[in-house]
Length: 132
Ligand SMILES: [Zn+2]
Image 1 (cartoon, rainbow, N blue to C red):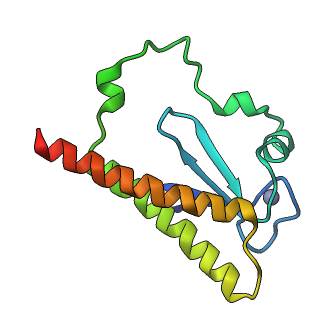
Image 2 (cartoon, rainbow, N blue to C red):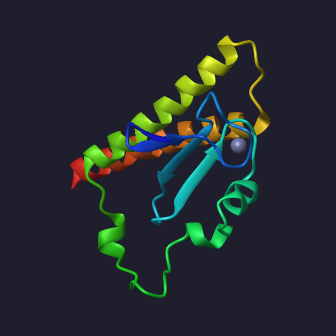
């Protein structure tokens, strides 16, 4: 079972016995790779091997498409907002977890710290695109 959530997906994690909480967040990264994050703490190897995949399957075959710096550098503002909405959903998931009295694992704190950096990069990106 998969549920769409603000541009990303929340799913039951195949890496552990995940019946209640949809611990697995999935999204598409900047380079077209599939991003997976289990909030119960499964690492990416555990998740992909439970699906019969390897971690390299999450990355696009870059030998097929040629590098195009112009198309890569270009993001629509709605795409940036979509990514930020996904990060906000992650924060909400973390907040629920804290509300239940659980401690956040170190990896989740790291993810949230990266989200802050990503959001500030998005601000600079939008600022630059308006300065042109
Ligand atoms: Zn898991």
